Image (cartoon, rainbow, N blue to C red):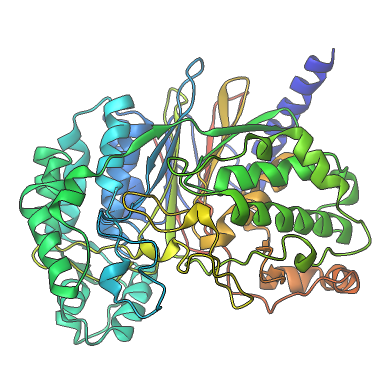
Length: 571
């Protein structure tokens, strides 16, 4: 009886989401298949770039599955969204196969080169070249394709080759992104040559044409040779030479030794739904499940999404989970991660520690640990194919355009991920340094990440595919989106658009988006009276391009986040 009631509630939730989505977009029976909002009976791709999303759609049209499309989109974004799309960085891919197969996670996070030392950043004056980690994207996409792909590898990389070789139309968002980084790096000759308009002499405008011939040659080698076309041969030679030129540590031996890894994703439940998310060295999945477990015992739906109590409980869950992130999490190949962190029992213990009338000062909750800053320039895309296979992929160069180092002759940007390690062993202070052991530098070690691709399923079938960029805000962005859908029954468009908040434990400050301040001023004042310190609103938090799959009709609802004007492309 309980099971039937739960199933009925789930169906009502899905039906309500579909109906409200169609009402909100005003399309009725004429469902749009492309745009900021899209609906399809078959496959769906949502990313930050229209060109990349349409590449994924064409792969699905050609008979490829969601992983095939994810590989093609990943390479296409390296061309069309160089701020974060990459072959010189790394990330995590979560795959939920059709019903009956276990979900899988592919870890292609960058790692430290063999010459790295535990105290290499202790002086704080290292060059950008020493911040470059060994890239993982190409090996990661290849591993996922080898495990689940259907189409030939070369056919999946070829669209990116063509976009780089023949060029594509620059969007308003890309023009702004390029102009910002180019203006801030006038003395970076190779960056200006490769990504600048007329060598950097004029600003980009919407409608311009961007061509990247060096990158096209690099991608062509990857298309023809697979990962050896990147980790060996001319591209590896060019990367090693670039490192020597600037005093970096990566060698051809480091590149050849890099391995992407298939891992088991973390799994939890919330209100009868299964939550799958990235496992360490991503901190995202464990922290997300901690927060969901901590709030599940509260009747927040009854309180209302924007009540002071709901906001307070969510913030206190964030505070506690982010503290555990600092204390316990790092590369699992170098650390033992406590299993209790994602248990319902531990979540209940965290819930019991939450006062409903008073904010817990972070100094009382792990006062000996502080967190460093983590940059926000990542990108995420979500894909669902006709058979129901779902892919959630988040990858990054770390900072905006990574290290801003363009490998000469190869046209690719390198990451600056080594900065995500703890810089000074044993030195932890109120200025933001953290020196705890789990995330100290070591050769071949992967640095801790906040990336958090997520897939929510019910009865073995994917229901929600989501993820976001945003550095340490990523996990809290997804916490907000998932709560909006599963707890408060918002339609997907509303759930993604809703204002977000972020508390990182340290510093002890709540960040809120401007809309939350405008629309719920009185509730925020109540939070202040409870002891919460609220920061001036940022322009935006995250970029959650998402897909919802109706369990009744099978329709895929693709939603591009307005914060970055993403693009959904359905079959």
